[in-house]
Image 1 (cartoon, each protein chain N blue to C red):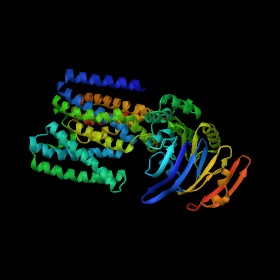
Image 2: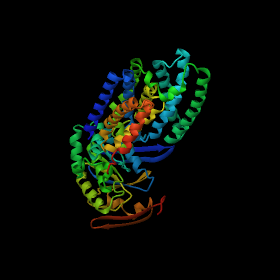
Image 3: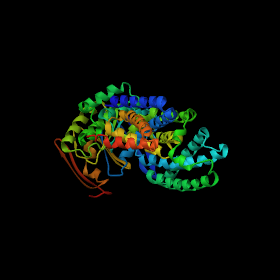
Image 4: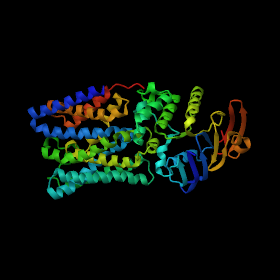
Length: 293
Length: 243
C-alpha cells in the first residue's frame, strides 16, 4: 500500500511539474516552491500529531502571521518591499522567538496547551497592532493580505532558492530523529530509559518547525503552514499503523495534494493554490479508510 | 552481585522520596513492596538514571551512566495508543540503545513472550495481558541482565497473571528481576526475596522473613498473611489510601 501511494504521488508531482514547465511556465517556480514547502512541513506533521502538539502546530499559523508582520516592518524599512532573503531571516527570527515564548510560558507553570494559548493571545494582539502599523506607515510598499495568502504567482527561482536552505535545515530533524521522536510519543519514559533525549528533541522539533514555516511563508502565506503541519500526518495515520510509514506517507500525501492543487488552480483560477492544497488535503482525509484496530 | 544500591537518596521538591536505601541482589527475583508513595517507582527511575540521586548504584560492576545499558525496564503505564506495530514497539528501543544485533534480540524477546506471530499487529489492538507481555518483551530486548518491572500485574486478568508468572519463572533463571506490586500474594517458587519500602528500607530478605504480619504492619494499616503450599496470600491496606 505504502509503495503504491508513494509511486502514485511521485508520478502526480512529476506530472504537475512537467505540466507547469510546458504549459504554464509562470507557475513553474511557484509550484516548485509550494511542493518543497508542503513536503517539508508534511515530514514534520506526524511528529506534531503524535507528540500531541497539534494545538502548537495550529498555533504556528498565529506565530507565523505575527512574525511575518513583525518581519515586514524592518524588511520594508531596509528594502521598501518584501525581499525574500531578508524577509525570511526576520520571519525566522520572530517565529523562533515566539516559539521560545511558549517554552518560557511553560516555565511559569502552565501546561503546554495553556502556555501555547497564552502566547497565542499575545500573538493575536500583536498581529492586530502590527497590521495597523503596516497599513499606517507602509501602505504603498506592503499589502498585509499577501502575508496571509502568500505571493504564490510572484515566486521566482530566486525566491525558491532563498527558501531552500531553510527547508533543507528543517528537513534534517525528521530525517535524522523522526523515528526516535515518534517513538517518544509511544512511550516517553521508556524512550528516555533507552537514551532518547526527549526534551532536547522537543526543542529541536520546535526549531525545525520554525525553520519550515519561515521558509514557507512567502509562497504559502502565514496560515497554510499550520494546515500542512497537521493534515498530512492525520491522513497518513489513517492509512497505516506502522510507525515507520508515517513520515513517508505524510510526505507522499502532501506531494499528491500539491499536484492536485496545481491542476485545480489552473482549472479554477479564482481558487488560490494554497487553499486548493488545503481542500485537497481535507478531501483525502475524509475519503481515507477508517483503520481497524 | 548484579545490582548494588548503596546509601541511595532521592529528593523531589525538597522532600526525600527515598532515604538512605541500601541493598544488593544477585540472579534472583525480588518483589519490591510498599504502599503508594513508598518510592518503588522512584527506585527504578534512579537505577535507570532518570532522576537525580545521591548515593551509589552499580549494575554488573558498572556504576556510572553506562550501567543503564545493562537494565531492561517495564514502566507502570504502558502507552500503546500510538501508531506502531508490535515489532516496532519491541525492536526500535533495542536499536536506539545500540544493542548488538537488535533484530535478533527483538525476535528472541517476542518469541520468549509468545508474541512473535503477532509482530505485525498494531500494539493498540493487543489485549491487556498481551500488552503486558509486549512491554516485557521490549524490556528483554534491551536488557543486559537486570530487569525492572513496575506493576506488571496491574490490569491483568487471572489467566494473564498465570501466564505472566510462568514467563517470569523462565526469565529469572539468568537475570536479576525486581518487580513492584501492590499485590503481595505470590507463588513461593517465584519470589526469592522481598524488599519492603516506605521511603526507607523497612525490610529486605527471604519471603518467610518479610511477608509476616509483624513486619508488614510497619507500613500497612491492615495486614493478614497466610502461607499456603503454593505461596503466600497477603491481604493488606495502605495507611495513606484505605479502601
